[in-house]
Image: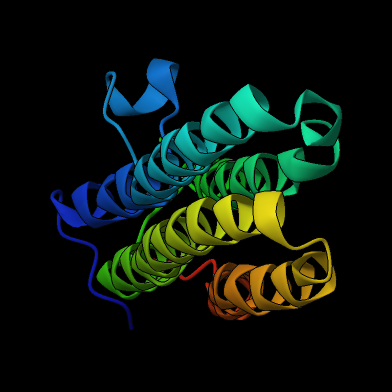
Length: 171
């Protein structure tokens, strides 16, 4: 026996809004991974612009933090599409599924936000240091990978949580 109140889909859509911005479903909300990716891109972009004044030939190699920030937003998009796939108005939607979708969206969203901030701060600092010392490049890439893994962990947790959603019949 499953409890399916009419407000249960609200929690599922809150998970979609937390994981990413799907304009047609979440009514133009902005998800946490998108905020983290935007911050990471802007912060690292500031450092890259500063680098370009002194050594323009290093700009292409220094775009790694910007690319990694964009990947964070893709993680959120994947989770939000999966959650929306489980929201079907023609089927019963238990409260349990709503809370699982909310948890999955928050897991991916908040880790994406943290990863985006980490990538932005590390990317800005390391790109500025790269102007002075080229040996910093390998260390920068390693630190950025560890920052990116924060978002990947959130994606994995969200995917696991999304697999636990059941098609229960309401009574």
